[in-house]
Length: 218
Image 1 (cartoon, rainbow, N blue to C red):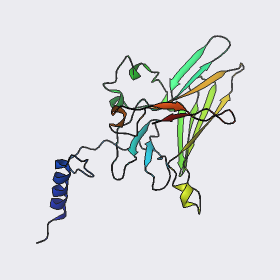
Image 2 (cartoon, rainbow, N blue to C red):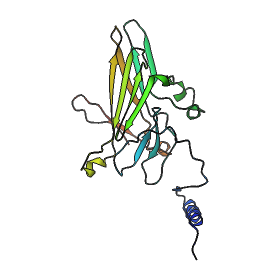
Image 3 (cartoon, rainbow, N blue to C red):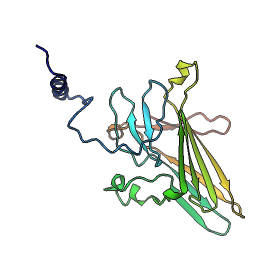
Image 4 (cartoon, rainbow, N blue to C red):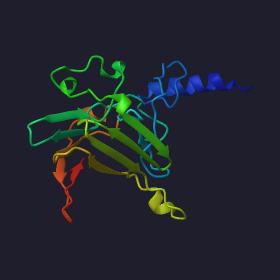
C-alpha cells in the first residue's frame, strides 16, 4: 500500500515532534513575508545568513534545512557623524518594517535611532556582491557606501565554502567643513533562533595585526 506523500510528511512531522526535534517543513506554519530579502552571506554549502535590502539581517540558515526568518534587531550597522560647528547626526543603517519593531522594548533597542530615510538609500546586488549607498545619511552632506561580498572564488571550492563574509565601507564628505564619522557594528551572540538565550556565551579579543581589531563570539 502506497502512502500519499502529504500523509507521509505529516507522519514524519508527528514523529519528529514526539522526539522533541525541530520540524524541517510544516505546511500549517504561517510563513513571514519574504519580499524584503536581499543577497545572502556565506560560502557554498556552509549555511547562510540573509540580509534584507532594507539593511537588517534575517533568514538565518546555519543548520541544515532549518532556518529562522525573523530579523534579529540587535544585529545592525549604525553611523554617527559630527562637525566642528557642533552639529551631530546618527542613525541605524537599517529600515525595519513597523511589524518588525512592534513590541520592541522602548528602553532598549526601541530607543535606537531608527530614522533612516529610505528615499536616500539605493540597494544593488550582483551575486556574490551587493552594495548599498546611503546618500545624505546620517549627515545631509555625507555619502556612505556599504559593500558586502561572500567568498565565491572560481575553481576553488574549498575556500568558496568558508562560512565568512566581508563588509567594506566608503565615506565621502561633500561639505565645506571636516566631518568625523564613526561606524558601529552590533551583533547578538547568536546563530539565529533561540541560540542567543541558551547562556554560557563568551566573547574575547582576537589577535591584532596591521591595526585590525577583532572580537570572537562563542
